[in-house]
Figure 1 (cartoon, rainbow, N blue to C red):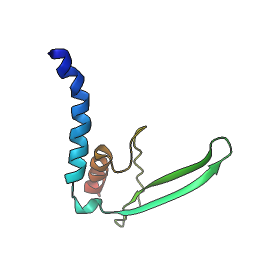
Figure 2: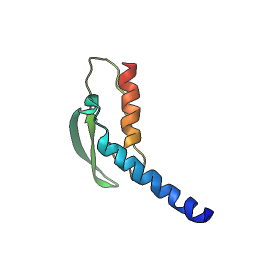
Figure 3: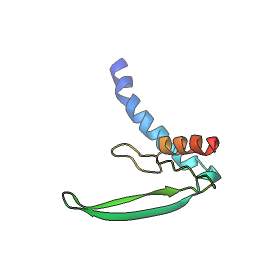
Figure 4: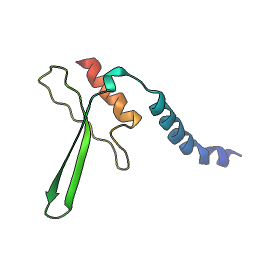
Length: 87
């Protein structure tokens, strides 16, 4: 029984984070979507994209998600919220 609970624990984190992403409606997170691409001579075409928040600050903050993640993942939005809260 303990092994079964431990096995599903990781899946619970995945499912709960996805559910929270769907109901997270913080209006500050409605930034402008951007994307670009460039060609690297070793890797070929590389696409970049994310969300751009402009709040009048002269400071640039770049948040990077982990492998397999994306810019709309809950932990990225939570980090962005902390940055926005700090001004």
